[in-house]
Image (cartoon, rainbow, N blue to C red; front, side, top):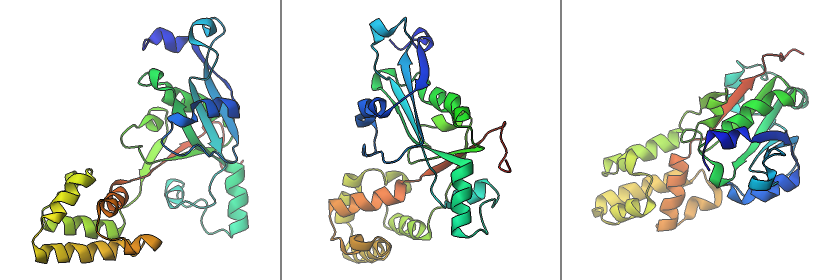
Length: 246
């Protein structure tokens, strides 16, 4: 089924909540969508509906933007900085829309349909700026393939410090993707190294509210690694037919 002929039989049409709900369980985030600005669906054309069905095979959801993002200020050279909150909110709501979800039905992944959905729907939003945030952006860079530019955040100092501490006791950064393996290595550390790394972990957890007092466990290790390895990527697209001054 994964052929170019299938892609030619699919079209992008205005969508609705039912299209999103049909595919929501395939997304890694929870399916609570909240307010949205627009939905577009990828569906078989009328000639192919009999064979491929009438349900959406892909969906993209646009939402209103957050009021302030650090990487937005970097990407726009400070265009939204220096404003009072109400002015900034009004300006971002007028100029920006955010891609909140892109979902492709698993049988049709690997065909470039996610980037097609992004590329062909961004101009339809009729705003100067489209943005997106993606935790898995570096793994599956379909936003860049669609013409968006990526910006990555600087690693927080607390993450750098803990990664260096883990390296001191023999855990390389490349190993920090397997909580079971990391937990086993930590359990085998000599007493002095175990005390050192436990102190560093407690220092690291001070930034995470109720998590600061988590006891040493696989659950704590899994949480720590999720914070060390998650690197959200910010994406932005400037509409060539619009300008931020309009």
